[in-house]
Amino acid sequence: MRISQLFHAVLLALPALAIVPEARLINNEHENGRQSRFSLPNLLKVDDVADLYSDWDIRGTMELEAGRLLVNEGSGSVWARQPLANSKNEWTIDLVFRNSEQEDVDDHSFFDTNGLSFWLLDGLIPEDTLNFGGPKRFDGLQFLMNNKEYGGLKIFANDGTKDVVNAEANALGGCAVNYLDSMVPFTMRVSYSAARNWFKVQIDNNLCFSTDALSFGDISGKLTLGVSASTNPVSKEYWEVLKMDIYDKLSEDARDDHGVAGGAAQKVVTMTQTETARPTNPSQKRPSLMEKIMNQERNAAPQNLDKFDSSLAEIASKLSLVEEAVNAFDATKLIDLSEAISGIKQIQSLQLSVLSELKSTYENFESLLASHYREMTESVRTLNQEVVDEIRRHRAEVHSVSGKVDLLMNNHKEIQGQYQTLDTRSSESELFSTIVKWVLIPLIVGIVAVIVVVYRLKKDIKHSKLL
Image (cartoon, rainbow, N blue to C red):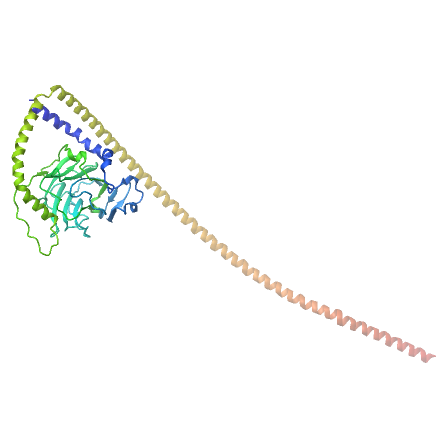
């Protein structure tokens, strides 16, 4: 009875526990002591995407916006210029991403174009971008978040000799993740430890994939890592890369699994079967990463059989310890836990009601903005028409004034011609008066003088005859 009550309480507590990984996304300052300097910097403090170019190669349509690397159409990617430090020994990578929608849509059928991939490659970065912003043919691992066949993560391994096909049957492993219907960021954590003999993938601290049959000890160099994404603009979806932290050791969260990721697709793999090794092409200079993994699986198979027997005994002992712990568990704590869970549910219902109120307020605000925008557009259109009419009236008045000015100019020219005629006549009269003054008057005076002289002579002659 206590066991069933305990399992019931744990199931009820899952919604509350789901809050924990999201809180861890906000601040991981406790891990910064071991964080590699080649981690993606805090994007909220990056003003220009060019500030990332020294350590990161950004390609395609990926752009920096509001503290995130965004791909809202086409394909884009970001690749580390420096290889993964401590690749062969121990490391942890935390990638925080989110799938968002520009508007609420129910059509999620764009599984051939919409997806986000995290890459671990052995060698240089290929230029191909046909595989969700990354290469279709590569030597390494691809961690694809996509909704083909199921929504969630699929892990593909390739040796660089063929194109990878997005199908669950071809996947090395994966798990279901409801990333399409959540506005909350997700954390994909990939960790490796040669000493502990594990390779693990977690989604929000929940185990998604694990195997002890994968080793990077025989790779020729260090691993190259990157993130790519692609989206069809018609789908109204876009991808955001919010954070990528790189550690050269296992982080505290990598050691602790809070649970198992949901869905039937999750896998915890311990490879024990013997597989026929792929023949090496004589022209190939070095074995591919896929071939190294297969060789590691073949060599590790006998050891895994012994580990399996010891693991069964260890599991049985741990189950007995669990049974003792359950029997010793205080039932009153279950009641307290149930009450706490009930309180959490009430808080969640209040949050949902507040969210619905916020949504209705947002819709009202959006409709108000739309009506104001329409009114403003109509006012601007009316004002523009009035301005155009006023300009036309002003132009007509200018044409009228110009015609009147031309008429005045013509009248002025006529008056000026008349004045010029008067000036010509006045100059002729002045010439005549001058001639009269200096020629005719002296001539008349001379004639009068001659007449007087003649008259006097006649008088003198007549007087002399009388004498």
